[in-house]
Image (cartoon, rainbow, N blue to C red; front, side, top):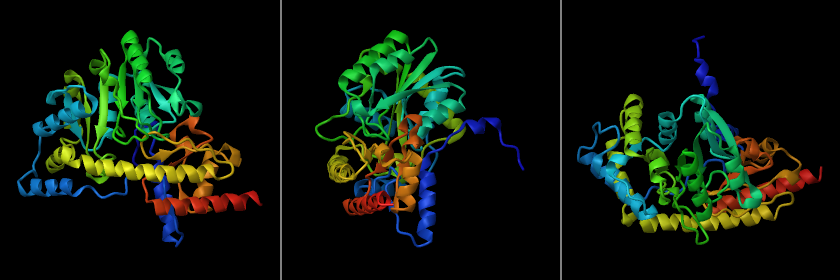
Length: 393
């Protein structure tokens, strides 16, 4: 067999895609599965965005573009960040990538050395820990706490900071919990970043999906933070553009140049016609459609939270953002993985074990409510019946 490099052993994975494969295999045998495992909006991409891509193809945007992105796309992103966060960026501080994950990978690779410590949320997006390990940095998990509505404890953060701390990763709104960091949380993190001279990678991919009057705030608003923040965002979640594969990062200009160089060496550039569509997505013409998406997500959130809290052995916090719930399943007597398997094989409902997002996810499961109310209601009926049947055995 061909030799596999040792470094590959340090790469993790994203369990949602593995569970999707299992669920598809069950469906191939005739079993009905409700899919609540994948974080993908079920809405179609808005038509104005699709039309912009078609027009771009017709107008010759089928060639290579600059590695950092088309100048007009980078400027549109800078304008959008100013409109949604109030922080001013120039086009030269923006890099457009095929999906948002490259910003995570390139961004950490650009500024973190072997042996540096990186503090990251746990439970959290599993690719954080994967990339940290791959680059031979030191992952320092920061537990998110149910009793704090899945915000981390700032004292816990401060206790983990050492002279080797190079970066702290924050994600708000958060995957998998839907938790949101408050203004005061962000302000204190900013103070610590300045005091201890570390970088913040701010994952804001769910920035426009918030509920109950909460409005997303970015850590870049605080003094000294634009200069020490990597802001990550993209088009997949807000505009239902998962298959388009387009994300972006905002960096200090000298870091943006390094990230563009990494992209040159890896993917060359992001598809030009996609970037033209992205400009349309970021226009105010798309705002009402994106607002309708959020309104529907809220309806789905309320449906699934109410249903889970009505089930014996389940306790579910109502998230303030994103489109996931992270119920506590400890009272069912199952581990997180046992519960996820039970949900899939016994109830026909695909979800993820809390431990897919790190060791502090034990005792929880993640359900995505990026599915129709009808499918969510069916999933909850199945799960409730399966739990009731189990309790009688």
